[in-house]
Amino acid sequence: MTETKLTPLELQIMDALWIHGRLSIREIQEAFPEPGRPAYTTIQTTVYRLEEKGAIRRARKIGNAHVFDAVLTKQEGRGRLIDDLLDRFGGDTQPVMAHLVETGKLTLEDIHSAEKLIKDLTRKEGKKK
Image (cartoon, rainbow, N blue to C red):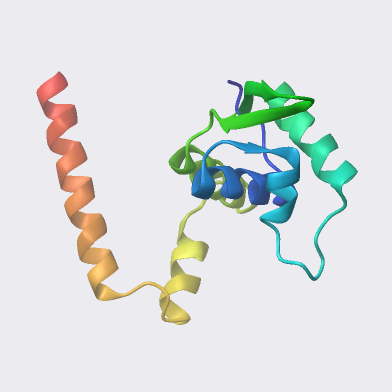
């Protein structure tokens, strides 16, 4: 699968599949909150685009309805979203981190967890060499 960016609606559809598993287009549409729910044809078009991008696949057919399954994992989807955000800052993480700290969304516990993750990844990389 290519590193295609996902639109907000595509991410919402992916989220429905990540939460509920295999769904038909109708079931995906019904997973959206009633107020502001996109039309069936909007969901259908977007699902087919996701299929073309390789993010989802047709798992089976029941009558006339196709049932879709996520190929892209939630972690991969989040990673793409974060990469897209960082691209908007020229790849510089500092403004994002500063904002998270200033708004209280990044805690000292989060920082310690990140430090541990970096140490673990560094150790793994050292063992591979």
